Image 1 (cartoon, rainbow, N blue to C red):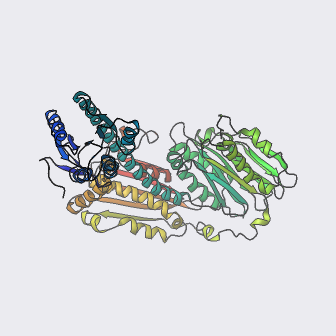
Image 2: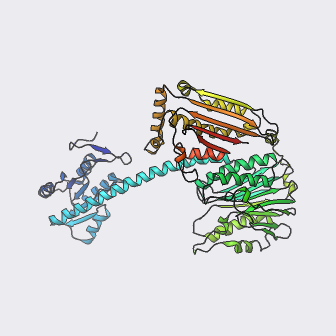
Image 3: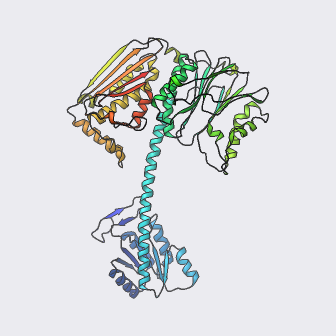
Length: 587
């Protein structure tokens, strides 16, 4: 323990090992002349400072470590250890803390005064010195030390918030990656380059085999970048994979995506997208192209651009299906043709002068008679070289499709996935009524997921259904029955406090219940069905009708998790007094 010098308490900085006393006015006087020490001590005490004294540098270091003064008045020439060495060591002990050292010295040579500063001194006064000047310097350095302390505390707080933010982003990235999946981007016909601006990518690149043996491609560029843009792409991957597996036409995929995105996207948020189907023999390409830069077809045989396809459609999520005048193009391909798709981050890359890379530079590269196998890497190098020292301003995605059917000969279609959606499951219903004791002892989500995993076809969607069920159940339990506030999580160590309070309230719970209903209805006109989920809790609910729409704000119950669950559902509604939520998951 540190020795008590005053009746005031002390706080410890665990990072540096330096303790800072609550008394901010203690000054250490270091001088081998007793008269000088006495005069200085009297003058400072009259001005309201607490004073400790040392008669040599070694003793000063010991007192500094033990009593932590906020300022040091240091003589230069002393026995045992001079002021230069003492200043250096005191600064080492102070570490990240700003402890001003003012040298009071009789030396007047410029070199010696400069040495005072280089050894750690912050200022100096030559003897004899003015009391007024000395007190003014002490006051100025006191203000400076206070400002330094404030800045340090704010820096530490920012570092703490950044650490928590990075942790949350990493967890969200894992969830996002599992939802979007790796698809079939490892097909030998495909080469791609992804360069996101941040952890989350606003560009989306998906590939899926079709039952016929061909494959579908989707390149999307959501409004903005980062986490908001990435969240908007989650339902896109779900719909794209599911419809590709069933052999749905390109028109069906586009219309389903547009309807879903129009429903969930907020105003001024949309997805520029190219959706492409390549036939099994790779000689036909069917294209929906909406809002992205032109698609380029490059001939392997002639080493030149043979076709460009400009955008002729609205981006997805802007207009309703009834207003979507969809234009689908069909193009014949030659063996080895390269189809180049890319987001606008390529053309809008800027150099240090602010010039855009632009379509003309891209066409210039492709007019150089380059071998087809090098064009993707060459374009990427040229864009990077053009940008130079200027940072990336948008997500960048490039994809090359090789129209060579021979590359697909040894790549089988995943028949396991196809078989899982062929037979219609029977209609069924499950109901749970959970009492306080059940809420303490039973994990209903695990029970329900085990049942869903045993159903052919539906089992492929168990991860997404788990997200929906977990979010709805946790909201019902935490906010409905236990009446926990999400605001707890925003406090320091908030998640720990939230979980402790949750466990406490759950252990003391004597009233309240949750009802969970799962009803599956087989689709009469297609492979698959609809899983209807209904969760009711006995809580007070919330006024969901007065809440802003989900496009502009999140509901009072839940946050980003609710938005994610909504994105996975065909329908998602609150009922009653807000303690009933119904969701429909179509597959």
